[in-house]
Amino acid sequence: MQRWTPGADTARFVEHFWSVTWDLRGRPPFENTVITFPAIHLTHEWGSDDVRHGFSLPATLLHGVVTRVFRTTLREQGAVVGARFRPGGFTARFGGDASDHTGRVGPVGDDLFGRRVHVPDDVAAAADRLDDLIGDAPEPDPMFVPLTALLDRIRDDTGIHRVEQVMALSPWGVRTTQRVFRRYVGVPVKWVLCRYRLQNAALEIETRADVDFADLAVRLGWYDQAHFGNDFRALLGCTPGEYAAAHGALTR
Image (tube, rainbow, N blue to C red; front, side):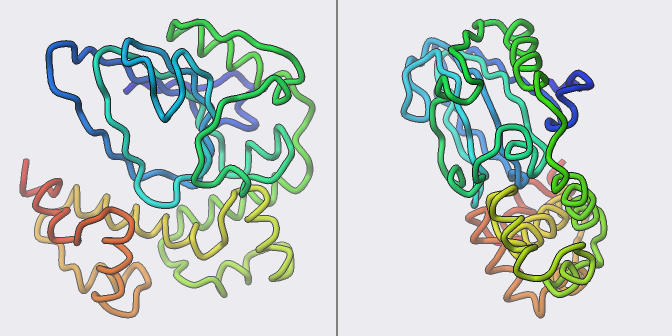
């Protein structure tokens, strides 16, 4: 995977651009698994596999927030160029309600940019085109700036474990905060908090040898190891121990 920084206008809404290319002709398909952030992705996809995510290629697609783990099977030869929006950035740029897209993949219609657009089947050219299209916008609405600050705090402060802590940091009341998260991010506050802490847990398992799962669970805010294990399995389809056996520091 390659990543690069968007232009200044686009960076108001997009965290980074990314691309993946592959050539598996004559070889078995490969299942790719990703623990996703609470972010919407806009992609342009093409290749000899003809159909991807249920849509004929080439296709420009909108991927809503993935509520579990993201899995896709790579076949034949292909490429994807994507823009990973900042949490809340898609709604700040285009309006609408992010929760309408949660858990869904769909084609980008002409109405998104207000006109018919063509994205070329070339990594550099596709990225440039998406950068131009997304960046061609007025300033985001004022709700997005304090939301971004709150989301960054949740992501970076592993001492935030409970929804009540988030509400104490929010510039809005409880009901307004929940509405803002659903409209801009596409998921509730509790889901965002749990996803970030599970990502912290997975990263620690990947990078540290002999992780004490009970200690890890308590440090990241779970009542006990059993609750942590249940949430981890719900996200990744395996226990923390199984994840460590496959991806942990001791496997390298």
